[in-house]
Amino acid sequence: MAFEATEKEKVLEGLMAARRQGQLAELSLRFKDRTEEAEKIWESTARLSTEIDIMLGKIMEEWVGRSEPVLKGLSAATAKLETAVGGIKKDIKTAQNVVKVVGLLDDAVAIAKKAFLAMA
Image (tube, rainbow, N blue to C red; front, side, top):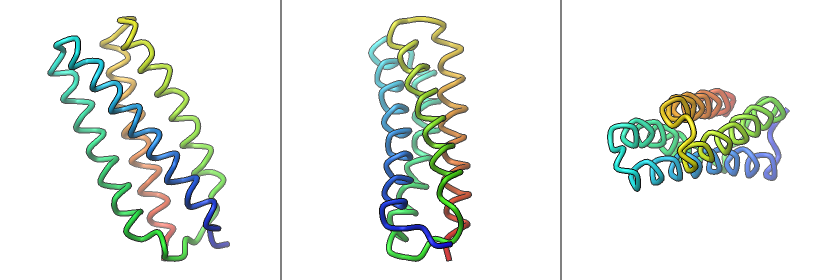
């Protein structure tokens, strides 16, 4: 089953939302002069941006597969990212939340790659 245009948009919106949360986490850490942790998140966000750029380049191609698992995975990752970024902003368990954000951004990259493999 091919993805519909609206499903493609939802996948990309989910990936972009995850990227935005990564950017917010990085920014919060930089404001707190926690450069080393900010750099870790920047690297993960950059990997996600690369995957988004690849998908945007292929947006007009037909996606094969089901979008539901991809969208569920992105929604779950984005919700967890929002919680972790909120913790960073409030200075709550910052180190643990940095690790969470990096892991969740990496999860988003894996979801993007899985969706990309479904294209063809």
